[in-house]
Image (cartoon, rainbow over all chains, first blue to last red; front, side, top):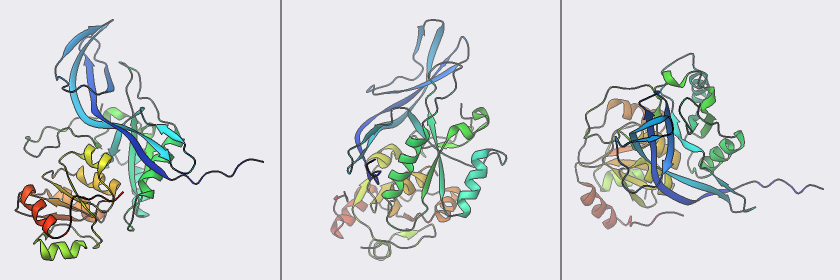
Length: 187
Length: 114
């Protein structure tokens, strides 16, 4: 007989602070992203790697973590999560915006989970549905008051990420001392 | 202590519409990654950040309120988003350092709920 499924209760462990680095190849125009724990990541650092000439165009302060169920001791690493994005409703026909409006009417908050861009001209890597469910569970289990529950959805619902103007929950362009820059497409 | 008590005792100005709630501990940071990783539900978040990305971060962690220090002006889009999702934004002209001192005197030490 199968053991009853655990009603997971997640805690965040093994938090590692670092940066999500964005690099573009000035030869082919491709972009890639990765997490780095470099102490002082340099912007505009250029180097060659195979056919690509990479240029570091952004370093966004971020972190990586694991979720740990303290009931069944399951652990899950989220090394594949580049970040969470807040939908700004920039395109009414986008499936994410349709979801956002539907969930908003139910008093829920939609966040979009993005995977990394592993290499130039390779699409972002999807994050398994089960891990998205874990993330939603984790955030909602911590809530006290009746504030809007969170629903984490996959970025793969965005029809064209190059047209997305959502806001990543990263520390880049966050300082209000900085002059406001022109908004750019996501990727 | 509740957000209403804090408004009364620490002379904080509410900027968004929200339901009052209990406050447990204080978290100070100007980085959303810090908040998402380390802040605890019920914390009061002191920051000078006013970008609207602070609202989903505050909601994710379920902080009791965001306190914008230094009298910084908060954009209308940040306040609107906070009101929409019942996130409290409070404002003070005091510096983060002064505000932390006052909160400590009011009995809100640096303890964080675990």
